[in-house]
Image 1 (spheres, rainbow, N blue to C red):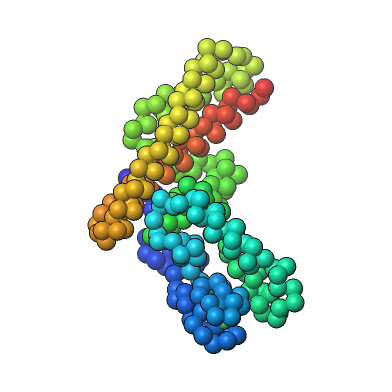
Image 2 (cartoon, rainbow, N blue to C red):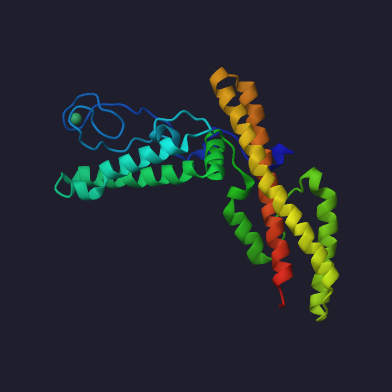
Length: 255
Ligand SMILES: [Zn+2]
């Protein structure tokens, strides 16, 4: 099932991503070997180097991120990179402080959020999550066509029943009728779906620990297995979210 949700898994498909590169080179100003964001000798801001968001903070590509540490690093770097500090610096140093600040903000926002962090890592690992093709989703919604989405097998029965009931409610609403029992039943199912959606975050976090262990042990086969599990969890989660959104649309329509 996992493969249905993935497009070309080759590294080329993530060419828009900043990929890890050589993070250390020579300082443009004093010529010594520099550290990542500033020169360790003269302290000048360095031109941004294309690195992934984990590397930007000097973190390994692991999913259990120490959020307190991430925050500390973020605030410290924000202060040190603040463009106001460079108003009298050379033009290029001003620009680099701006570029580095914006990279810093993107990296922080992405790593702070558990879902965005996981999705980002999966993209680094060559996975293109279906839900991330936002254009396809928007197009489908604009044209009223149902976007091809595979129902997770464990939800098949429930989704079938729910869709029947939603259809019934749509018809009733069209005819200006209202069946409180049906609305209540749909509301009850919606609550269940929301609970399942919530529980999947816990399931995902359990995979984080497995992933981090596999990174340490260096087992490629193990990593691929966990990667696919996480893709599956995220897809189920997105599916549930879309379903709840559809239910809300029907419940709220014509009222
Ligand atoms: Zn220097």
